[in-house]
Image (cartoon, rainbow, N blue to C red):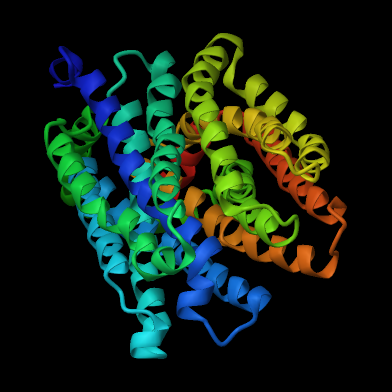
Length: 449
């Protein structure tokens, strides 16, 4: 079965589908983040001041992160029990549909309090969809790899969707931010959301063309054999995947959560919070920071496959440790350059931080996925990634905004925040790498549970 599945064009097709699917999903997520930084405070929380309006908008952004672990649990269960492919098709349709609805949503001026309420509800559904997307995309790409040693490289194509989605979102907002303020606040901001309908159709067709993961198919056959033997022996049926993860190896899950922090929280620091910081506290025009982030995103797009290739040559753990260590020091260069205020200096500053952080993000998915056995891998990596996002990703722009407001004119508290994020991931990934026989030990604990 596995030999048939990986022959021909399936590995390439699976990687392409993972890339396109995550690009669409992250495009939807990033346009919300950009709109939260630029317009949602004014349109959905108009009674609040600039600071509190931005804080409220970033609060709705954080809500999506808190919903993501629920999505990871729901779609992790579907992906581990029913199939990776089915789970990914559902998440794509959910995400695209909700994004279009946000683009059609009336503002506070039209329906009052119901506007932010509906925005939050749609954001929750969006978070649930993203919660199930990432883990499945990583697995569909990695598990179709014809050689296990290349799994991290193939899994990086799912990570490649993140900068690609950001590039596309930035291009769409660049088109509409050229409008005058009245037109932008009236209808311009809706265009990127409505464009998601086109992407949804494209992604749906591509995802349907990919076969189910060969690892999942093989595991299903093995589970059927084990279930038959257990029934004959009168043993209890296997626990749900989430219960196996939580009971079998909570320490492994905690380390996987920490290992993902730099790729998640660091990313939203540079690509979401920095929009608000530069426009509100440095006094830059919104078009300048969007141009900067567009250039940096293009850089990250090329960094991703190159980093995965280098890591496959020097070793994943060694590469991840080096990138996380370097990231501890990059925010000091970033803020020094950003505060100079020119497009070149801002691009260089943010680019320095994203260079190492993006390289780390490219490799961490494949590395963490190997920590979990196949039968609960979707649930394990989804919960690790989404819990990390809920705890650290959604709160980072909020915490950054509070620090910027309370330490106006001083960037060192913000730099310390980024350093702390990097240090946490460095410690976590090193501990994760030194746990001997981590997958085998997890399987033994799970069997005794």
